[in-house]
Length: 78
Image (spheres, rainbow, N blue to C red):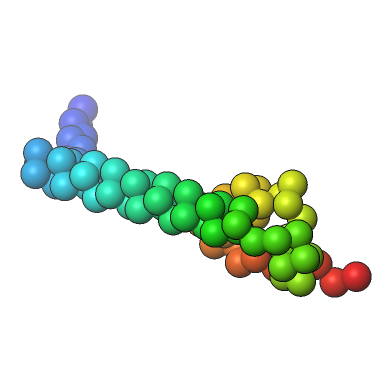
């Protein structure tokens, strides 16, 4: 009867800590960009928002999609 041994690579403690740190930094950066986007869009007048095709009620949704899903602020074609 033969025995099979599987070998898994160990990336080490440093790699785990570094990747956790990098993920946290990226998340913090995204959160900041989201907040800045929402603040900037909320400062616009209703007319300016209408010109770029974003209803005021969709500001947070559009900013979230842009920051977290790489979807630009798409203007809706009427």
